[in-house]
Image 1 (tube, rainbow, N blue to C red):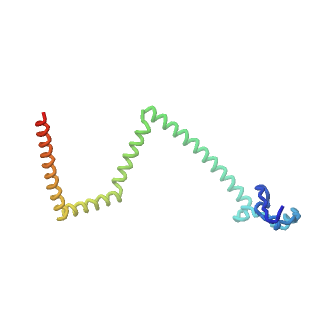
Image 2: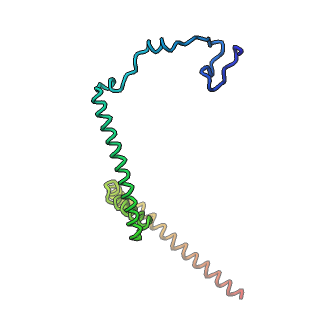
Image 3: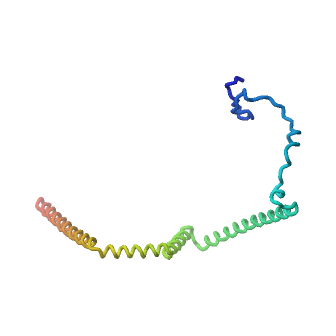
Amino acid sequence: MESASQDINLNSPNKGLLADTMTDVPVDNTSAAAAAPPPLRASAYNGLTEAEEEELRSELAKVEEEIGTLRQVLAAKERHCGELKRKLGLTPLDGLKQNLSKSWHDVQVSNAYMKTSEKLGEWNEKVTQSDLYKKTQETLSQAGQKTSAALSNVGSVISRKLGDMR
């Protein structure tokens, strides 16, 4: 290999390293294993004796088995529930309607909704009692009446013109 090239074999332990930085060094597995400390066991790390560890593993196995059993029971109950609903003619849409209705009721009785509704009521009262609102309402009312009269007159004129054309 050239010194400027790289080892691009993806399975190579030398991938991405320059060739001139690599040297062949024999590896003695026996001396490396003897020099390394033995791996720490979980029980030694957690301060558990082997008996305590074994008891915990046994308890874990039992709990996992109970979880599996409970999942099977739950699945059977869900199937039975579905069969009962089908026999009663209850559709998923009925359940959705019921859930939405209950959720909307829950929202309406919530503190946040009630406080917001109360605050909006207060603001509405203040706005509708203000002079600016009353003047704007009066002006828009007059404009609506004048527009209605004008459109009525235009309609009468058009009707008259169509009558004259016959």
